Length: 102
Image (tube, rainbow, N blue to C red; front, side, top):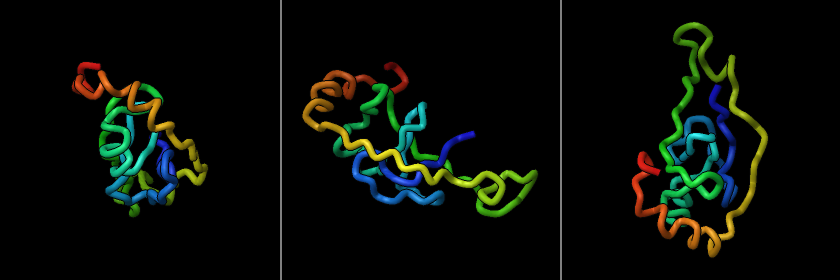
């Protein structure tokens, strides 16, 4: 089950379950769109993968108890600000490689 983390790992801005600004990598590292695209250059600082918009879990039970009421978003904050200078060195080559080829 996808863990819907409540904040950006870098800047700690709130990312509620219905946020269109949430970005995740394949390991569910969670960042806001601004940090993911502008500061992190589309490269996850934890794994080197790319980012994609985080899916929005339905708030309403449309079918089979697959909704926020049954599977709520996480409340555990993972605030781990990225060392942007070190990340720039790490991402220098990776940002030139499309995420599907990394």
